[in-house]
Length: 369
Ligand SMILES: *Cc1c(COP(=O)(O)O)cnc(C)c1O
Image 1 (tube, protein in one colour):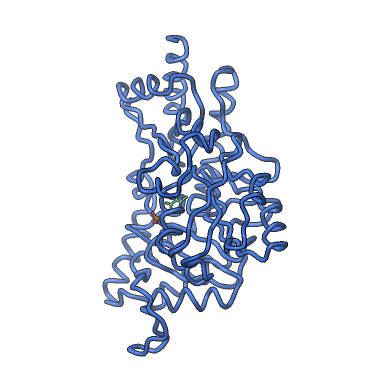
Image 2: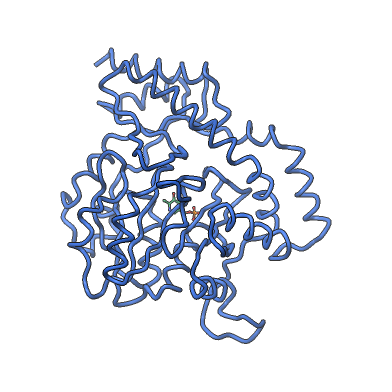
């Protein structure tokens, strides 16, 4: 039985009429950039995150980049984040002109180890950029406390975690701002690239609005040099439809995760995702640790079952970041995660039968060791 890691076809078929109708609506309007759909999505997602402001941009990467620029994280400044994240987190810091300063992860949650942050704060630190990895929020209270004491900006990378909660508070509502991604594989995925900045800070909102539109609040009159990073109406229309289904899909992901948890409980060699009691996990990824990962990966491939490694190399070991000067073993928990993690299919439309096949594959692997 072939099982994809993510079945976007199944999702589309389940909402096809709604999607096709709004796509037709946008085409009939011939308004592709900005307009009522984009504004409606900004309002809807601000409300969803329980913050007053949101700005649509061209990608999650740009959401981070424009936020960092608007927050003044440019040349001569440092931004603290983890090396165990998608490349864009640190890439955006460099593209803003700042220097990424890495702090290792906490091995159970894969999110930033807050106990190690303070030692990395210097006079140049401008922001902390925690990543809500795989669908679970970082431990935000200690981060917010440090930021308050050291006068730092907190930007939440919530690209994988729309709908996640920490102590009841939604992702993106805790720091000064948050970044969302609508890359198709995210829990709220568009029909292409897209992203959104969510913030309670009026100055950050204004800054990102300027930057996404070539620094002009009035067409052809430019206050600063920005870029073209707008969210288009087609994406907004599709996302507004999908947003109506998001909570249901998150529930389905959580139920699938609970089913795996139960099945893997009988296999002590398998480390299932740890969920902090403070967190509501939305399982953009269901990530296990398993001995001899490369061998089980091969077994999955032979059976036509999708799985993936997020991420195979810690960012401090990437060629492009060698100039930051970190030794290979500087972040042992990040390195270990890179060697051991494996993401299994957890998409909402996954069936119990398919999950049983995934579990059987892991079990066969373990008995072959
Ligand atoms: C996907 C992702 C991004 C970037 O989003 P894009 O929309 O693909 O540019 C940033 N950070 C994390 C953690 C991500 O998973």
